[in-house]
Amino acid sequence: METQARRRYNQIMRQLLNKGEERELAEKLEMLRLFLESTDFKKLRGEYENRLREGKKVKVILYLEEGKPKHEMRII
Image 1 (cartoon, helix red, strand yellow):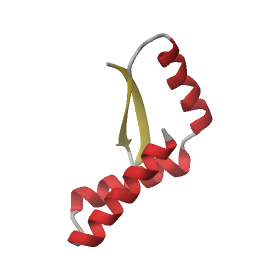
Image 2 (cartoon, rainbow, N blue to C red; image 1 turned 30 degrees about the horizontal axis):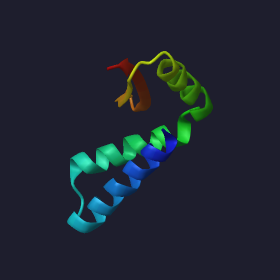
Image 3 (cartoon, rainbow, N blue to C red; image 1 turned 90 degrees about the horizontal axis):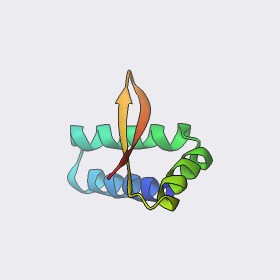
């Protein structure tokens, strides 16, 4: 999950550099930066893997709440 977030961060960074600053991409980039800096990936990975062992498909949704990164795990 951390690798996916870093990969997405780098992808958005490249888009910003290629297209110039776009507000939406800049906001996503900032959200991902905050997520990468503040998330306990060991804990998140444990929660995620438990659901996978149960045979469930999981999607992690990232969002900002009062300027702080939050995530929600959804069973899909």
